[in-house]
Image 1 (cartoon, rainbow, N blue to C red):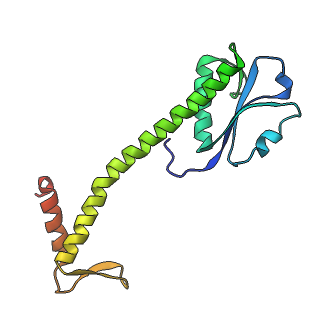
Image 2: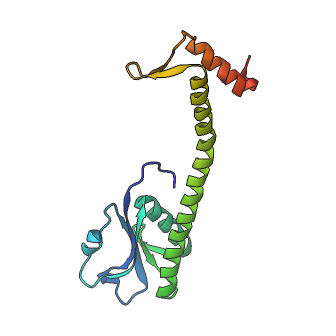
Length: 168
């Protein structure tokens, strides 16, 4: 999950009406959270799986990648000829989605781990600002010293204390 801006939608596995009674299936997606996109297929199209998700285009890309590795692509990049039971293809579809969920949880956990130290640093700066009689000035959107402290010197001292390895 590389995209920071997330959209909601669906991914789906269907057997289009033209492929009924064959072993051919299609993977698709929609940026809408409804099945309107699936309704656009011909009458008698079979719906095997539909999953509501974040970043459906990314999920679809991963589904297509995995299916391409295991099955023969028969049309475009989304239609596959499958040599297994229908239940197996449905299980594969859902297992790929489940691995996506695990990967996205890992991704956000990593982001949180990277942001926490920054948050703690900012919190420490705010506490130090209070200690050094600094106040927030809404007019100019900056911190101002109550006792004419030099703001730049304050930040430099704070950063040198926090990161002595960068003090030259």
